[in-house]
Length: 341
Image (cartoon, rainbow, N blue to C red; front, side):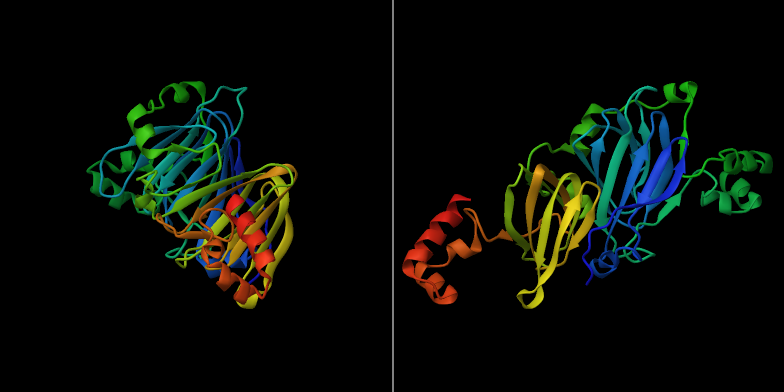
C-alpha cells in the first residue's frame, strides 16, 4: 500500500470560495482503507449550497471565527443552525443536509474546514460524493418541470423558477442584503453539536456524545519543536486518516512483518492514512508539528508503546528480558523510561 502523504487538489473555485479533494487516484490508500477527505475554503460571505453526502465525516475548523452551518438530520424536519470558529470539531452524520457560510465581514479571514471520514458506502471508493438540493447541480432540477409542479402542487412557471433561478455551482458569494437574511445560530445547538479542541486530546463519544451519530472519533496532537510522540496503533481494526494542520516533521509507519511502510517528511496540508493495526510515530521539526486525525470508530481502542498505559511497559521484567534478549540492567532502564513518557 502506497502511504505517501499528499496535498489536496482543487476541485472547484468561484467568487465565494473553493473546495479541494484528495482523489482516490492520487491517494490509493484512501481506497484500501475506505476513508475520504476534502477541504472547504469560504471567502467572506461565501456560501456552500445545501447538499448531502454518501459518507459520514468530521469537520475540523482550521481558520475563521465567524462560520455558520445549517443542518437537517435524517428523519427530522427541523433545521439547526450552528456557529463555528477555529478549533471546532463538528460531526456530519451520513445523509445530513447541510449548508456552510462565512459570516465574517469583507475584511475578515477565510473560513477553512477540513473534512475527514469513512467512505465504506461511497460511490467513488476513497472519495466523498455530494448531492446538491440547490444550484445548477441540484437533484431537484434534474426532474422535469411537470414532475416538480405536480410534486409541490404549483404551476409549471413556478416550478421553473424554483429549479432554475439559482445559477450558482457548489459555492456562491452572497450580497449584503442576502447576508442579513441568514438565520441566527442557536447557542444550545452549538453547545450540543460542536466540540472545541485546542490542546492535544483524543475525542470519543464518551467526551462528545454526538460523535456516535457519525461513528467516528478525533485526535489532535501538538508537538513542540523536535518532540516525538510515542508509537501508537489501533487495536480494534479501525483506520486513522491524518491531516497535518501545522508545522512540519517526520512520520514513520511500521506494518506487516515489522517492515517500515513509510518514512518521510510532512508539512502543513499533507494527508496520510495509517492502516488498521499499523504503528505510527511522529517527530516534530523545528517549528513543531500539529496533526488532526479521524478514527473510524466513535469508541476506538488506541494503544501505545510508551507512557503509563503502555502495553510494553505492562509486561513483567522477566518477560521483557526474555522477549527482547536484554540484560536486567537494560530492562530496568527501559521500564523506568517507558513510564515517564
